[in-house]
Image (cartoon, rainbow, N blue to C red):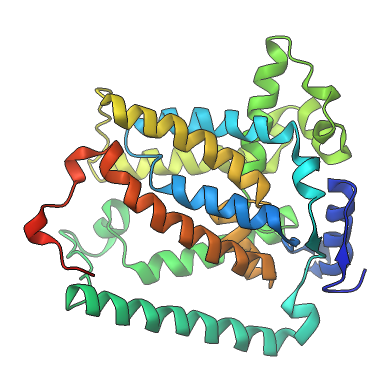
Length: 321
């Protein structure tokens, strides 16, 4: 399948096969593949939806509600993903395969630099100065335990952990697929014949649905992330969930969760699978995800005052930017 060829894919299997054929590699003698997805209408719409609802979901106890409805939104998406994936699109495009490793790295770093400079320019234009990183109350090993970590620490550790994931799992970091599995297994328990759906008849998905979660790498990683977040909050003395959730905030968590799950599946992943791992894999669809998620995020910021009235800016503080 030629890179950039215009195609009409019949099913998810065709896409996954193209992905595997284009990006199969070896790391320490173990087969690995990148997250290289199609440049498609579904990615644009899914990323846009996801971007809006990044501003609505989450936040303390609301995160539990968001997570539950994220799972439900993921499951709903699997009922008709074949329709979205059959919309006109380009085959998966890897800038690594198209340009070579070194040129692809140069292009990526140039784009990163352009984004950084644009961010600095507009931040200074709107607010006169850049936001200063908070000063940590603790230093040394205590800071490592209680935070906040310097952003560079987080960047380096994320890079190393993604490399470890690639080595052990044979693919980059992913989150969303496991949430659909959790919802599908739950639906099966109450009598929904999920296994008859086209999405869950694909070999990899059928295997995930039938096997224990202990054999699902993504599920185990998600459990680890949640436990790690809980531990980090506890060590920092910030674990204090507030279950007194205002009505509008609760609606935002429900709507945000549903659309986060739905949009992530349309876009071949969320900000982890499609954006972080997609760009790290040299996939053009990762950059497309960034553009449309940013547009959606900008709209989501405009919607926040309705769902979170306490955040509504005072007129005298508006900058006109």
